[in-house]
Image (tube, rainbow, N blue to C red; front, top):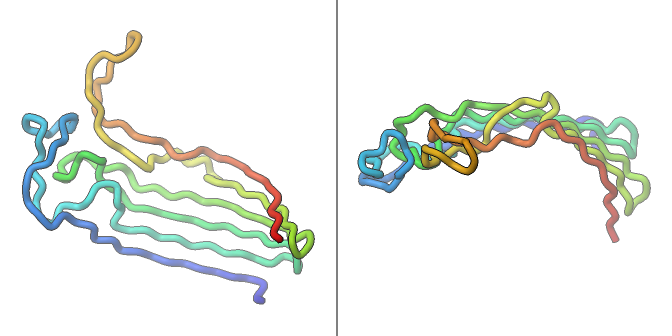
Length: 161
């Protein structure tokens, strides 16, 4: 087997609606009486048009492997914005590291580092109802997002038989 494996791929995704009509989106700030107009060709929310992934794995010794990968995604529309009229979720990238040692034919020790640069990015967005909520809090902006996992490290043991 080679000491260095390198890969890269790019995907252009043209996920669009193929109909025209109204959809329910009651919390979308641009909705008219809870409805939004979808036109043929509007982008499907949460699906980035551009996706790029690249990485490598290097065999440091016959039993020890080290690798890194990077994934980048273009912006996408919030769920509930099938009309494509609101501001998009921002583009983002994430880098990860991995290493493993093959102790025996059946035992491997491994470690992973995800979100190496502790980059704050969102992977999901939708709209929430505005107004007062529990306690003394009030939601003024209907846009809600889910943050990605921060810098994390894992280790483990893999046993096969």
